[in-house]
Amino acid sequence: MIDKFQLKSKVYFNKQSIQLLEKISGSKAFVVSDSIMEKLGYLQKTIEHLNKAGISSCVFTGVRPDPDINVIAEGIKAFNESNADVVVALGGGSTIDSAKGILYFAYKMAALEDKKINKPLFIAIPSTSGTGSEVTDFTVITCENKKVCIVDEFLAPDMAILDSTCLQHVPQRVVVDTGIDVLVHAVEAYVSTRATDFTDALAEKAVKLIFENLEKLYKNPADPDARDRVQNASCIAGMAFTNASLGINHSLAHALGGTFHIPHGRANALLLSAVIEYNANLSGNLNDYAAQKYANLAKILQLPAWTIREGTVNFIQAVNKLKKSLGIEENIRALNIEQKEFEDALQHLAEAAMIDRCTPTNPKNPSKEDLVNIYKRCY
Ligand SMILES: NC(=O)c1ccc[n+]([C@@H]2O[C@H](COP(=O)([O-])OP(=O)(O)OC[C@H]3O[C@@H](n4cnc5c(N)ncnc54)[C@H](O)[C@@H]3O)[C@@H](O)[C@H]2O)c1
Ligand SMILES: [Zn+2]
Image 1 (tube, rainbow, N blue to C red):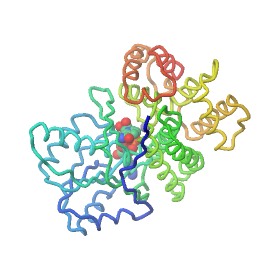
Image 2 (image 1 turned 90 degrees about the horizontal axis):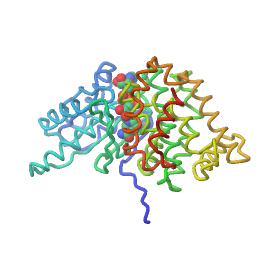
Image 3 (image 1 turned 90 degrees about the vertical axis):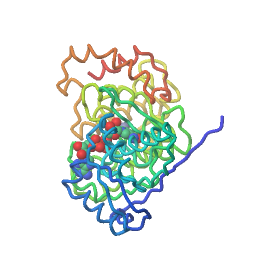
Image 4 (image 1 turned 120 degrees about the horizontal axis):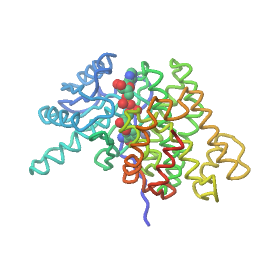
C-alpha cells in the first residue's frame, strides 16, 4: 500500500502574525466569525488589516457553537452575494468549520447548476487552541442533534495564522475543553490504524506540549509562553490527525455531545481514560499495537514503563491527574444528565458512533455493545 502525508495549509505563527493580512492579494473578503469575536474587537482589527491590503470586507457573524445546517445555509446565501475572492474564518473550531461548510456546499451547489466559480483564498485564524481545524480537511456540522463529520481535501484552509494575541480573553472553561481536545487528537492520531512515522512525530510533540503547558495556562491564563505552546500543540495535533485520522473517542464524543449539548472537548475528556483502557484491552490480553503506543507516550512523559502494561496504566493515570487538575468532572453523571435519559439514549448513541467517520481507524474494531459499555463506564 502506498501511504501519503500531506499538509496543504501554510502556517504563519507568533504574535502579531495577523498583520500578514495586510500583505495578501484580493479585492473582497468574506469574513466568517461570531458575535463574541465582534464584541472583543478582534473582528474589527481583522477588517482593518484587510483594509490596509486594499481589501474590503463583507461580514457574516451568524456562527453559533457546534454549527448546524441552518448556520451553513445562511452563510451560503451571504457568501454567494459577496462575490468574495478571499474567505477569512476568525474564531474557534465552530467558526472555522462553518466557513469550511459554507465554501464546500456553495461549490457543490454551483457545480450542480453548472456554474463555474473560482475558489477564493481561504485563511483561518483560530481563536481557540483546540480543534486544529485551521490545518485539517475535516468539518463537523450538526444536523438534527447529530454531528456529521465531512472529510475532504477541499476543506483544508490555504493559510493558517496562529496569533496568540487573539486568545487573550478565552474563558477558562473553554481553555480546558479545547486543550483536552488537543490531547485527544494527538493520542487518537498516535494509535490510529493510519498512523505513520510522520504523524507519530507530530502526535508525540503535541502530547508533550499539552502535558507541559495546559495546566500552567489554566492556572495562569495570562502566561504568554504557555498560551503559545498550547496553540502550537493544537495546530501540530491537527497536522497529525488530518493525515492519520482519529478513533472512537471522537465518534463517541460526537454522538454524546450532539445529543446532550456537551462542548466537544469536554465530551472527549469524559471518555478518554475508558477509551484507552478499551483500546489497550487492559482487562485481558493486551492489544499489542495500541498498548505499546500508550506505553511509548508514558515514556515520553518520563513515567515508568518497564512493561507495556505498566506504561499504559501510568499513561492513564497521568491523563486522570491532568483532568483533575483542570477541574474536569469525573463522569457524565456529574454534568446533571439524568440516568434514565442517558440509558434511554444509549443504543441510539452507540449506533451513531458506529457509523461515524472516525471509527474505521480506531486500533480496535468495536461492536455496538462495546461502545454501549464504554458509555456506561463513563456515566
Ligand atoms: N474541523 C476539525 O478538524 C474539528 C476537530 C475537532 C472539533 N471540531 C469541532 O469544532 C467545534 C468546537 O470548536 P472549539 O472547541 O474551538 O469551540 P467553539 O469554536 O465552539 O468556541 C467555544 C466558545 O468560545 C468562544 N470563543 C472562541 N474564541 C474565543 C476567544 N478568543 N475569546 C473568548 N471567547 C472565545 C466562542 O464564541 C464559543 O462561545 C465543535 O463543533 C467540534 O465538533 C472540529
Ligand atoms: Zn476534537
